[in-house]
Length: 173
Image (tube, rainbow, N blue to C red):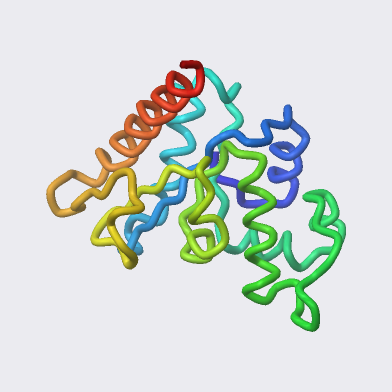
């Protein structure tokens, strides 16, 4: 579900907390694929039985609105800004993204998310097009010229579900 208002964000935030749950970092270079993160979240709400239908996709605008409001930051457990920087600086936005990612069940399509949480082992990384950083850190890289655009989100969601199942299997062993 794409989150476009703070009210929708609050509904997600107040749902059952899933600290440590996985999240998806998506990198798209083509502006025509803007809705891909929302499509991945919708598919995961339908097929990820572990999530209870609590997957969301956040736009950079909502992340900025959360960072700009002290009450929203407190809801995420962020009590301080980055020194002299305003809360909506890159540093402040990275703190917001990291706090949201800790709850899991979120799809990010924002370069800032890669800066903030790229090393987190709970993150599934996907790229549509050639990644800007080393391809070694991605779980899936899709060439958008080789697939119809409606196939991209299902490929990412299915790959995520396989990755997530293998993680559960490995941790149970």
